Length: 143
Image (tube, rainbow, N blue to C red; front, side, top):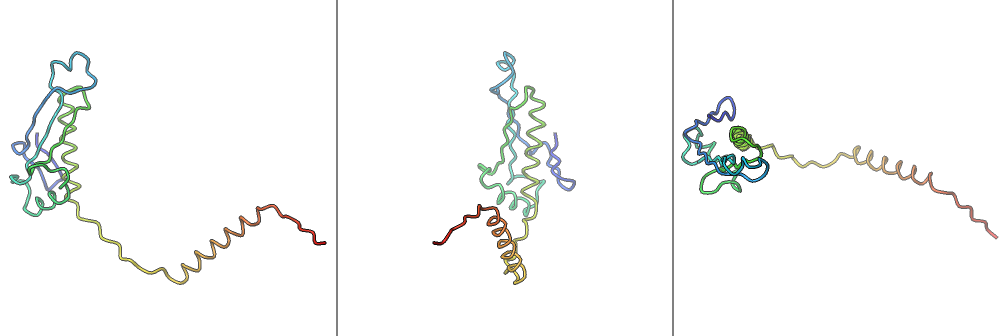
């Protein structure tokens, strides 16, 4: 199974390492005899599909999820190994795709304009007047 990250990047199946084990959860007695839990790992450093820039980008973005140069995805949500394999491939593809996205441009800090400040203050005053008009009017009689 090849991993299609995006139209320009396909990770061949020989770079993906699969391990299977018995999962916990639903499945009844079938769980005691089938290996439905999927452990998919991808070695970033030894990959030939990624360029050096992509390797650096993925390593930087996913630094908290990389152990010994490998990204690992574990799935056991489904009762069949096939569905868990598809889910693990999809999750790994999403992880790599998000890591390769260009960083968002930082917002340039600007000062609010005088007219926007005036509008803000006027709306606050108007809101305060509306609240004041809802209060009960107390009549104080002077003696």
